[in-house]
Amino acid sequence: MTDSSPLAISLFSELLTADQLLRNRLTRVLPNKMEISHFSVLNQLARGGSEKTPAQLAKTFHVTRGAMTNTLGKLEAAGYVHIRPDWDDARRKQVSISPAGLSARDAAIAAITPLINEMVQELGDAKVRAAIPVLRELRVKLEEPDGKAQRPV
Image (cartoon, rainbow, N blue to C red; front, side):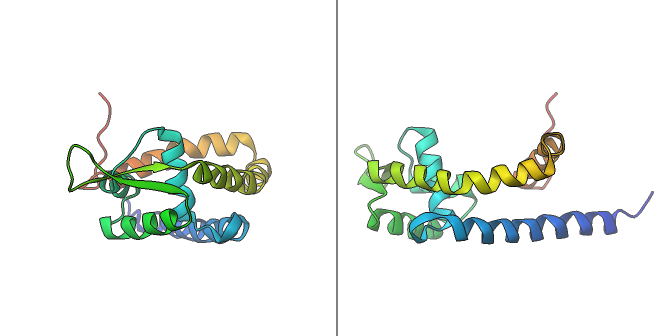
């Protein structure tokens, strides 16, 4: 049996460094002082097309409900989301994206697309296509509570 510690450390070091560098670049190009977390929530709501509860969003983004409440409060103050009581359960709220939120999300996509396209072009489509399944499998593995991904049978 071989010791894979150096390989694992190298993998996670590269992932963490790439994540930090990408976040820095995206933050610089996002419009109107938008944060990555704001864009991510707006993008999720726009793609999903239906209302979500703050708890559902927190689970989707693997953050605490408090962190999601903070993000949603900022988005609501900017006019990007509507938060309303859940008519079936007054203890819950429902979140939807507003027309201004859709516009802000579209502006963010327009701002980040050239950056992402440039990176993909420099790396090459073949390398990016090869990396996606590995990164996806790693993400799925990390999403499992015990760290062990469920393999399809």
